[in-house]
Length: 239
Image 1 (cartoon, rainbow, N blue to C red):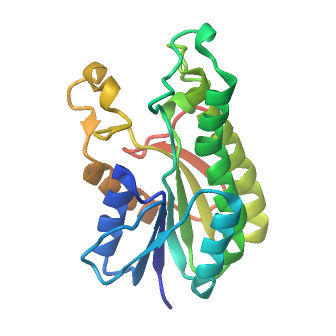
Image 2 (cartoon, rainbow, N blue to C red; image 1 turned 60 degrees about the vertical axis):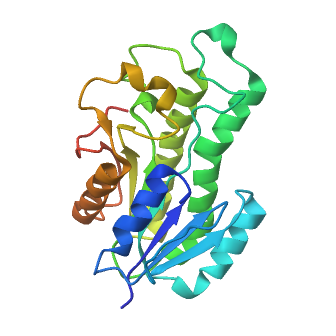
């Protein structure tokens, strides 16, 4: 039986690293890479799919993937925004802006939720499958010791809550699927560049390293019907 990977948000540093990682996995037949722009890969196993992240465009992606129903055993949802040219993490509550917060929530929580809604029909099957969604340690309420970053923290906490709720429904309707809320640590990327000076020595990771960690973790996780909230080292994070 075919075993395929699907990378959503494949245009970022982590998405590209995961495409490369899975394309070299002899146990995977194809890798579908979805992003706003084309993904260039030398591997014949990689199929690039371009799409905006509106529900209509995402529905069209799922329709295109319909022939792969029951074969998607590795799915990575890599979407996320921390900052942009007009958005920066809030240092104090006076910095909260409703429009910016809405944009952060859409990218970090709503887009992954829409993917999980639309992909359900493709995920049901007999093969064990793992869906890893990029969360963050700052989404942990119990681990919040520094404050600030209101929109990013709250959007990742919302994502975790959505994933927990999805795990309950998937347990009934797609028993072969395991959901993972994944904290990658600080990855050397455009997202982290403004904050890298404060990263402790040895804690700024390459995207390739984190892709290796995630792939290994996905290989080990049991399809137990529960949501796991784990970091790159496989250690659990408090909710």
